[in-house]
Length: 183
Image 1 (cartoon, rainbow, N blue to C red):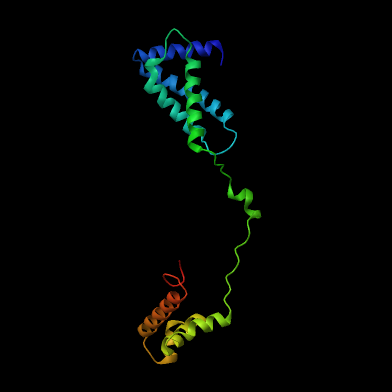
Image 2 (cartoon, rainbow, N blue to C red; image 1 turned 60 degrees about the horizontal axis):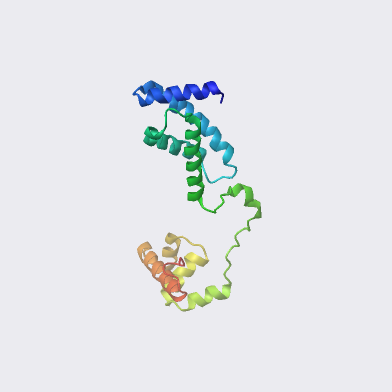
């Protein structure tokens, strides 16, 4: 900013303190642009949004406008407030660094498919009563539907669902899961 800009902002702030709402709105608009540029220059890593710094600074200016000494330049006062708000934003962020997941996606390992051996399946099914074992095996191992399983064993679909639910719950309980294999 030039000396004329400083003089204009000081004039606007004096008018705003005297009660001129238009002058205050113009002062805030111009000040927001200056603080936005300041914040963008100072924030080189992510984690702090320059717009948050702008809004915090404008709010502090509004609340503390009576503390500005009218015989002094307004810009050093504005930039001091902006600097403190920027420091506050960095403190809130702490030492964490935010990284876009797309930037590191190729370095992440692919999740491994969970495999269960036939021996593990048989061991789980062997502990079930024969009726539950047949239903669980038909649906979970063979891949049959509820209606196909009901037709195969000559029972109702409701009985198949109940048997399946109880069988899976027994397997989950036996292997330490709280509910159907989920912890």
